[in-house]
Amino acid sequence: MELNDKLFQAAEYFETNPDTSIAFGTEAFPALHCEFPRIGDKTVLICAGGDASFYKSGAFSAVMRAVGRSDLNAPRFENIPPEPDTECVRKIVCRMEEEKPEIVIAVGGGSVMDAAKAAYLSWQTGMDVRALFGNGVASKAFPEKVFKRVWSLPTTSGTGSEVTPYSNIIDAENGVKCLIVEPQIVPEYAFVLPELTLTLPRKVTVDTALDAMVHSIESLLNIKAGKEHPEAAAWAVLSVSLIRDSLPLLSNDSENPLLRTALSAAACLGGMCIKVCPTSLPHLCSFSFCGKATHGAAVAALLPHFWRYYLANPEIAERTMLLANVFPGKTPEEIVDSCEKFIQNMGIETAPGTLSGTDSSFIDILAENAKLNPVKLSTAPVPIDPESAGTVFHQVLDQVWSR
Image 1 (cartoon, rainbow, N blue to C red):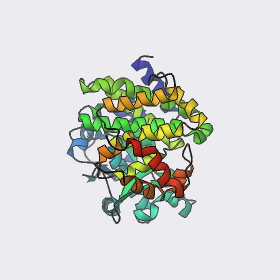
Image 2 (tube, rainbow, N blue to C red):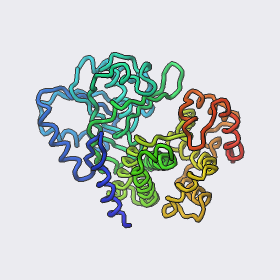
Image 3 (cartoon, helix red, strand yellow):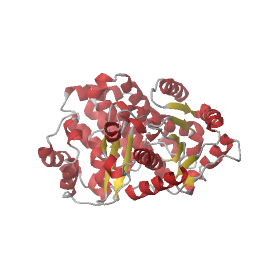
Image 4 (cartoon, one colour):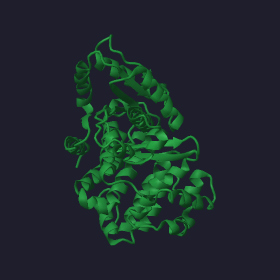
């Protein structure tokens, strides 16, 4: 299937997404423009990253062109960092209390969208962001309340946060990245303009694309949830295929619109995947790499090793074969090997210790941190008893930790 055909298929999948209205590619700007007239004199708070993601990407110009009016009350909270923490979220909440916005637009990468989602929920509930860590905390506390949800305008192609119920925030009190899982933070709209990613540096392009790839593969390997959402397998395979086709070519053609569109589509598909078939051990362990390696590099380095561990489950081996046309191989093991080689060819070290600059004692830290999320361990494709996490992690990672 040609790249344009794959993009057409992706667009059809976007139309089936139930919780977020996705306007993609050439449809995104007109859709954004059409939404602004109904805002009237309401306050719109724009949450954004630094100059690179908000101004240099063209996102600010795109939003202003879509507004088409000079009298819109649109205050901004800018310079949300790549790894937002609880203090950052609290500052956004304070700004929301000052401005009392009717609409919040998150313009940036996954970090910006995650911070805006967490802050909007915190402001509407009156709950501190730390109290929202966990699964469905706000929905349980306010079972009858329908919360307003952000509009998202991604400027990277990786996290899929524009369509997910997740927000990753560093707990500033202990330095650990924590997760909010809340159906009511799934963005209301996703306006995906691939043109905003044209000037992304190569490293950011690779890191975010590999994050999207790992999202899709981990979702595909989530066989229990996959039985409830069989459509997600096709999304995942298409997402990985788009990345495989486009990411290597961007090294020599970084502003190619078609290739950038492919990565944007892959990231959004990956977000749809993990919304219904969540990630597992590579993403769980990646949280411990905060400050030592980028998120995309960490999950990419961990993926092949846990994937091989999963192959002990015959259903995982069968699922793996769905990627035989993407990563060449006649056996599940060969497919994993091909995927690892692809990651390495993209310049990412797949020895986790070499990547993070740590020795094998860090595996014990991974295990201890993983125990804080026993649900992820128990729902892994090959379930792990929390008390056995250390033993299993050493079994999986000892021989591949460093080169």
